[in-house]
Image 1 (cartoon, rainbow, N blue to C red):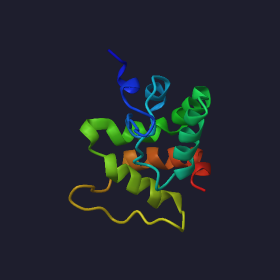
Image 2 (cartoon, rainbow, N blue to C red):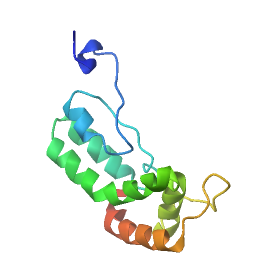
Image 3 (cartoon, rainbow, N blue to C red):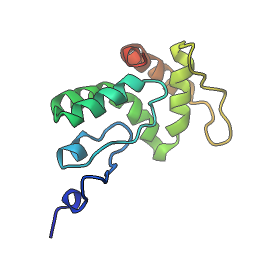
Image 4 (cartoon, one colour):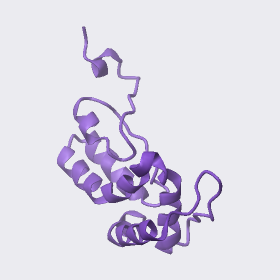
Length: 130
């Protein structure tokens, strides 16, 4: 029996990962990843993808580690802040080319303590926006 990723021909793609944490999957042959934070730190997603394509898993993992604190917030408390954490990251970043909005029933604003954490995270990863 073929391993999962070898069961597909070259025309297929396997997308696996949780947000931008997909390097472990890429090391086993998965191709591509999904991104929930791409709108605010698109370059991070690009750098992860490009590093994985050239099999530089150390470089991909380094970017994943930098953005991991934001991903951790998105997935805490059963994904309670999945969308609203990204919205908060956009709003606190001050970037003029994206608008996070004000939330809604499925993505209400994050609590103040979480917002402060996101602001600190964005200060350290804002270089991945452009």
